[in-house]
Image (tube, rainbow, N blue to C red; front, side, top):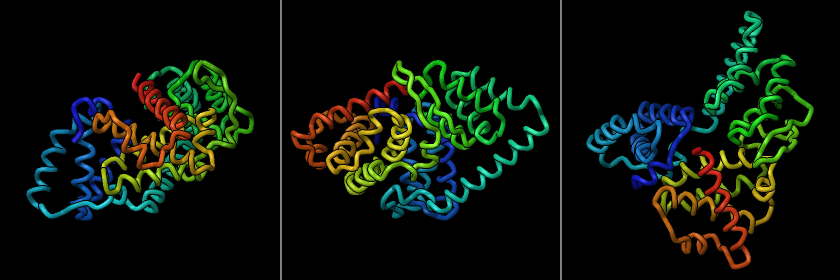
Length: 308
């Protein structure tokens, strides 16, 4: 179980929290009680918005332990819904949203201006993401121009900037987009932006696969955090020198990022201080040590900035 200190660091976006709630419901409906127990243990380690549900989750976990004491989960990642089912649900939701946006745009001339106002007038990342998810389906030059102005203005949360780039790609935008990152202005081509995690380079996927394999036996709960954290990090780093390092098709680079991600999660989950075991597990030699420490430093910095 996570310490109180680690709970403060394990904060999920509301949409992520909703996703796990849906998965929990599916597990109970399909009598996957072992998987439900594992997911509840994970959720009870999360702070922030999740803490409002802790009493409810603790009671449900107690009931499952009493009613199904022998139900156990194997690998936690396998406890989530089938990937093909998730993809189908996502496509259906995307189609429904596209239809709704098209109808609203035709019926209400002020709909797009209100979305742009919501995007520019809020500092709440969740509200910005909600506005962008709708703007992505608008076929209006002013919508594209509004997103571009917003990106080129002040620096935003990297995950939200990435979503804005995805919106531009869905609009079939062809011109490079300017955005602020690390106090500098950079230009990125929306056509290069991955629309889903599967579109990221193979090297990015290998890091996650390696950490999941390592965690299967020693710390299954770490896989949940690894997937969520690594996907967000890949999005946040897109277009930066860090992203180029993440994407290097080199076994040493994969080991460096895998070890850094594993150690970072151990620090957050369990307050780990020593990294000797992790460096040995991933074969971090003296030659790779500097790159490993650089990667770990970036992960810590990103996590700290994401809380501000």
